[in-house]
Image (tube, rainbow, N blue to C red; front, side, top):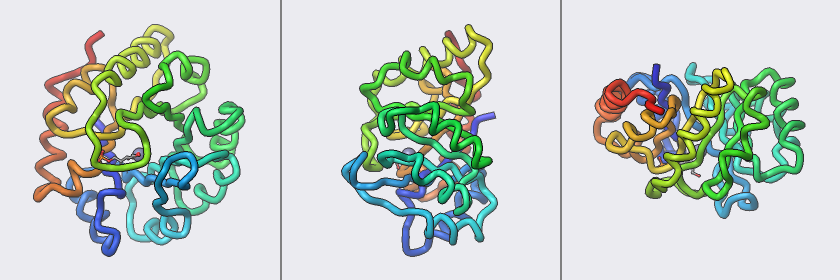
Length: 223
Ligand code: DX5
Ligand code: ZN
């Protein structure tokens, strides 16, 4: 089943509790929390204290996307704040295996993300140790950008490699995803969908999520 993870970055920060409740009612299973440090990406968002207070008002899976340098320093803090799934960037550290281990030891599920310029082959050696891989479909840092169409081939390469090697893994896409382009992504093998503007800025988020689920059903993975 398609997993929908609305990105809180596009929500109204003055009423996050209500915004979370709104997308949870609309059928989202995850909530995507973009943590930015102004170093790994040229933007600053929010950190552990905010996640910790939101944890009390939501039972969605907290999908924490760390866009920070040297993420190993903060794994336990984010886990304690309430992260269920922690995603770090391949490009943000010297030793991805050590970060994977630290996330697993914290008790959270683990995902690794790649920026648009990083080839899918970079992920292959780690695939067996991950619960999920996140293919960035825009340059990380800001919501509201347009999806880079070349990333669809990266998703397909990863899904094909995983299937060929008997690896069960979630493939998440993040950036510029809408009800209109989602079919191309699920057809390429994505099954976890991050959408910020498309969901939070919609008049009827429930309808958007419904359209996304229908599109995914119409466009299952094809090699
Ligand atoms: C970008 C973030 C995304 C962003 C997606 O760096 O990782 O999660 O919020 O927003 P939309 O769906 O608006 O492109
Ligand atoms: Zn994100």
